[in-house]
Image (cartoon, rainbow, N blue to C red; front, side):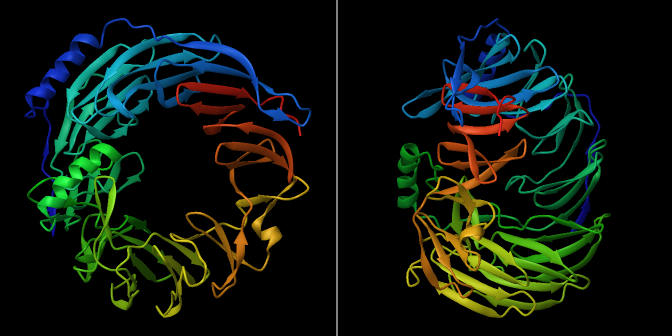
Length: 516
């Protein structure tokens, strides 16, 4: 069903009903956010890693008073924004701080204390937009001063049109927090997917498919259900779930009423000016004006989260058969593979996998698809939907939760100390990664052996060298030979720096003198 969006141009503030406890948090933030604050950090010049000469590379090590939660580099100003969170009893507290550090002088430019249940942020030219469940705060990048604060959470930042957009459809001006426009968004099950259409519009999966003009808020919506109100959760199990959530950090299950299961829809496929989308009920094709060109019903009770893609004149759908409850996946339906004519929507085939286990992954190989569940691997012909193989993991000595390893992105260290790809060592075999090991198989997925050596994954490239990672080890190689090795935490390469984040430390390694 298509309906036009109603748009309100207004200058009034966004009014929401806020619980008293939340109001106290907001008032506390208002009272404290502008106070001057100096972050207690130290820096030291060190050497780290090991090169071919046996020496380490020069690095700067920053030590922070709290857990390093996130960071962002500004190459123009040569600065880094660090976001810290306080911890206790092995979990995050609703407190923390952020600071901007000058990478040349190693001095902090400014710091601010933070409060909130989550510290999600976006960077725009001149602004830092900090999000929590109950409020959004804008800070000036130059001095850290708060520019504005608004109740509610904003899920999309558009620096081109200078707005941030809430899940309910309210667009605020990034400079002053004033409401620029608002439109009605059905966000009962949240925003599941977003596709940018240049600088002027977006497509979102929320209550169906919506197109929103980012300058005016106008657009259209095609309604279809993308979530489930599940009343089948037993009260005893839900009550137990509360305790389990507190101990494990998993989601808290409600003790009564309906439980919302979201994500029972596909990705948004935008191709040649047409939009394809699948819900539990149907797969549909629309033009860019929101006109329905065709739709085909899907087996509602069997369909959950799905993946769609286009190849030639066919639209393929893999039903992954799960939904999301918080951060947890739950079985919804049973997996199947289907194909439809891209022009008419006519179903070409629908092949049931014959299992109730959700799909954990898939791999396209030429004109076939390998589908992985918790303990089986299936191979299907895409043209016909014919099942070519169905292999039980345990019967074939395959590990659980298998997925294909890339032959060219996974390396093994050989006896002479060099590194080779799996394809170089075993050119005629395929490789399945499991929970505990990697397995060599032939084209029929028959077991050929276990790879006992640690696998090194291609992490990136720098100055003609491959960068490989295995757990907390990083190695730079040239023509398979090691050039430098490092012990690392969460790491990435930014320009000529190796960035290594470890709990309360940030290590910036200068790679310019790394010679191969």
